[in-house]
Structures are given as C-alpha cells and as structure tokens.
Length: 156
Image (cartoon, rainbow, N blue to C red; front, side):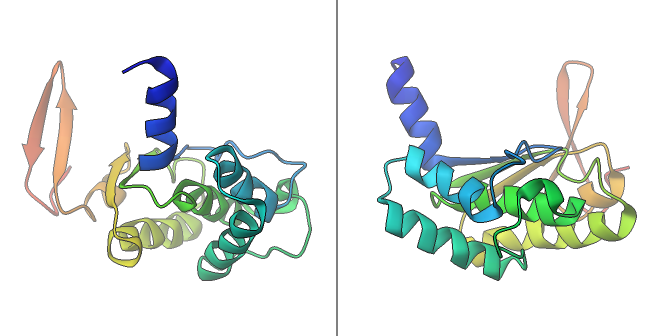
C-alpha cells in the first residue's frame, strides 16, 4: 500500500489507545475526540455529535473544561472515545492502564474489555499488568523472540 492509502486505512479501521492518552491538553474532551473524526473526513456536525455520544456513554464530562484538567481515568476514557470515533474494526491499547492508580485501572480495564461487545470491534491489549492480562479471552506472552500462548485467566 502506498503511504497515503495506508494512513487512510489506519484512520478508518484501527483505533489506538496509548499509555498516557496522548491528548491535546488545551482542547476539550469533545474537541479531542471529534478531531480524529474530522481528520478522517467526517462532516463537522456528525463528528461533534458522535464525540458527545461516546463521551456520555463512557462517563466523561464534556462541559467545556480543557482535557488537561481531567483526572487520569477521565483522560483515558477520552482516549478510548477518540479511538472509537471512526468505528474501527480493531482497537489497539498499548499499556492503557500503566499510569493509573489501582481503582482507576480497574474501571478503565472493565471499560476496555466491554468494548468488543458494546462497539463490535476486536480488542488487542499490550500490558505488563497480569491482572489486566488475565481479563483477556486469549493471552499471548512475548518470550524472547516468540509469542507463547498462556491459559486464559493464568497469564502470570
């Protein structure tokens, strides 16, 4: 695939959640989420409407406060909304709970593992957190240069 086609494919079919969210702190949650849709070619009114719906569904306040003023859990849920805005076929989450306290980690983990059922996309989570990994339907461990399948619920 050419670079441009590859970028378009990624933006339309893949959503990514990073460890620290990688949001623009001066933008509101709605603006951060809608931006991904706007870049994907969605008309402005549809992008903002869908962003508000996702944020509401994920329990993120979108009252106009900048994203930089949100709690860690609210920022991660905003990042999940941004990753879902273009209705991807697959959601990739790279250490999505690594920077969160235990209680927030648990709520974000529950949210992430509900994604396939609620939004109909596949979920791939990369984590060092055994408790997060144990929630997966399938657990693979990178050992040396090989991926080794672990028993579900026993990813330790």
